[in-house]
Image 1: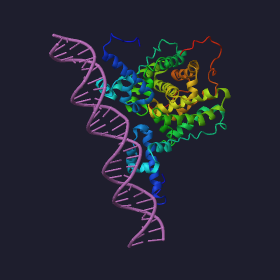
Image 2: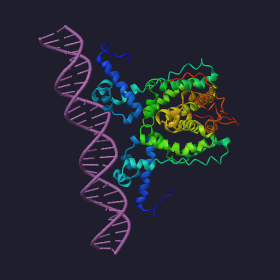
Image 3: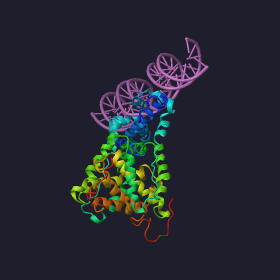
Image 4: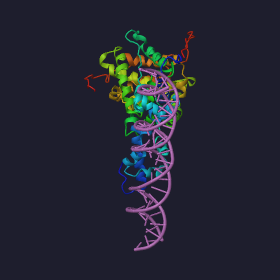
Length: 207
Length: 207
DNA sequence: CATATTTGCCAACGTGCGTTGACTTAATTG
DNA sequence: CAATTAAGTCAACGCACGTTGGCAAATATG
């Protein structure tokens, strides 16, 4: 944006055109269904240029699918509203501009592309986990973060990838309130009996 | 199972061998990454047989990816434990035998295959929505069901598709308790202020 | 035993893919 | 203006894919 006309060298402009086109197509079609010819057509250049600029389709994907969740420093947020704060943050990032965060890109591809899946796991480990860890007891951090991740992933899947009509129709503040409350419970561990076992209920372990 | 040796015609055995192989491969690799040659190799027959038996790769996928959630009649379940009941049901179905439910198959492919995505939406509409509808006020049913779907989809994604380590490590009863509580709140609408707006109801009819 | 009919393998087709290298045009520089 | 370099096109490669048709076994049928 801001129309780079004469100042920037042509090469930089095409580079960015390719990256933009790739991001859009990877986001809406996933890695496998997106061809370098498609990307080239959308960027207004020949497909071979993409290889020359980025080396390979995989390299381009790796370049483009680098989501930075930019989680706010939750240590400064009032622990009582951590849930709503996180959901609000994600919603803003996901629908603010045209999928800038890059997380939808990964989500589309992670199901069939192991590299994308690993990248998502890494994001979880490096960004979600530490942010959640400080909101409750350290020894339960992994499970708390896992629960949070499952709800956030599900929201993103339902709203942006699967596009379930009712989930698409939900107003942002409705989501923030309801899903936020869930994240809140998960994150702080205040929710239910958050330990794997409460009393020795004589469990009937299934599978 | 039950070793069909001499009774069943050969054709039926191969048919089933193909379906089994296809289900397994579609489940673990998704639609795009699974080739008919792979399926043939796993089923112990030539790839061309698959076309002869099922017409096309798409037709085979359609045949195999027909998940029936087999939701229990939640009308008979105590509304106070609907959440746990649902989560328990899904977990049992998902990890009971070798991915019999077919939902993981769809989940893998839905991200990049529009047909699979539509099928998932249909399942949501035909099975999840009605089951949730009766658990709370009819006018909020769509949103309640949407919230439920987002959490269940997220759980399935995190545990079976993405395989986030902490989520994989969770014991079944831990999930049933914690995620069950969330589903419970979503399903009954008792959770938060479940209406799109809290004051000034003035409804703004949405889709 | 002769003959259909089924069940399977094999080789090949057409297509679309990522990628490559030769060539043409535009920009830069002496 | 000539020479060099950058930016881009074009045709083609090798490959893997879904799919097809022909032919060999096997199996049923008269």
